[in-house]
Amino acid sequence: MLICIVASFTSCSKNPSGGKDDKGKNTGSSSTEGQICIPYSREDGMNPFTAKSLLNSSIMPLLYSGLFSLNEKYEAEDALGKDAVVSGTEVTVTLDSGARFSDGSTVTADDVVYSFNLSKNSTYYSTMLLTVESVVAAARNKVVFKMAVADKYASALLTFPIVKLNTATEESSIPVGAGPYVYTATADGGTLTPNSHSELKYKKDKIILSNTADTKPLMHSLVIGNITACFDDLSGGESERINASSIQVDLNNLVFLGLKADGVFSDEKLRRSLSGVIDRDKLINSGFEGFGTPTKLPFNPAWYGLKGINPVKHDKDSDSAYLGQKLSGRTIKILVCSDNNFKVKFAEELASQLSAVGVKTNIISVAYDVYRSSVESGNYDIYVGEYKLTGDMNISGLINDEEFKNKYFEMLSGAITVKDFVKDFENTLPFVPVAVRNGVLAYSRSVQTEVKPMPGSVFSNLTEWSV
Image 1 (cartoon, rainbow, N blue to C red):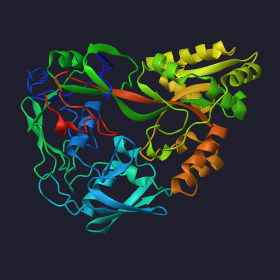
Image 2 (tube, one colour):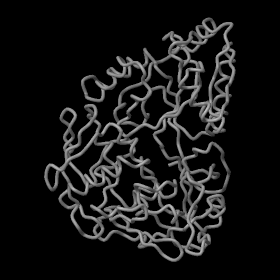
Image 3 (cartoon, rainbow, N blue to C red):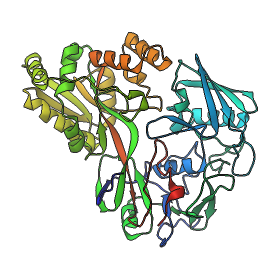
């Protein structure tokens, strides 16, 4: 666990608007001494398929369990499901016979089908389920998923929330879930109370949810003790410094350098030399204020599939000489989105590192719409990119060459090993991995428990927290 004297933040919400009570007043300022209090947006609602704010999205795993959950190595662990059997493009999952919703009813295959269809059509979960095409109920306690491609790691995708059939019919619905807590609205916001059908042990019999209309004062609220913890994915690219304990949270977001395939970087050796020259630690420290984990490989370095696999070693002097020779007399265009200050600083550090080996650069910092169209039209030599990896580490969206993409799908299916694919990747380098970006969970110094965020579940051990 990383405990910091000072935690760096942006605002703690994707959507700056939070919630208000019936009179339109902010209700997030009550004292919480001896209690655990987490900010949320009552206005955004507790429907996991329609909630938009980062505040509420981080709370959803406390209310709704998936078929599987992910541990720190991105291994799928049984939750409501078990015995995932992969056969070609089909994945058969048997439901745990003891799985119960918070109202005591049994979790059935029909509930899973209902929840999958809602997830597939939601903004938040649809990307995660891009390669999961459909699901059918094979029996009351068994479902069969149809995949777009064979995927031996498919169970890592089946973490979407399972809710009771027909309980999420409206955006304002509060579906019945099977998570560790049950939500109840109160005059001051809401509470989370233990799910009586859960086998977990709870240190606190109630968690307070503080209704937050304005996220800007949240850092001050944390310092003075009005809230206990707040998560920030740092997607805004600006930071604020406060006194609090903190831990970095793995977002599974791959930061990479996109290279123009038909430009000067069509030379594979040049791409490899670029990867060998850059100092990833400095790029993350300068650009993202240290919130990231450097990687030379195209997957999250925490992923269990990389066990025993080490990146190829580079001769930096040789790589520097080759870059200087091949790029002599050229000015390399580095494209970056100006809307994110972290990435602008990242691009500036990259330019500085290339300058040190004799490569001239020109940073093209433009607003997101222009940035996106420039990437699509190839108006760059290098662009600073970020890509959300799924639980199965799907990078197919970053591979344009169909032959190499098929090789990646062979790895997913198990036809070739991860080690063999990584070797081919390092030779080809369709893009240059730099790091996996992290967010931050800040929490009160009064928390007496080791805080342990897990992939997709920031408050994963909240049941163990004590203050």
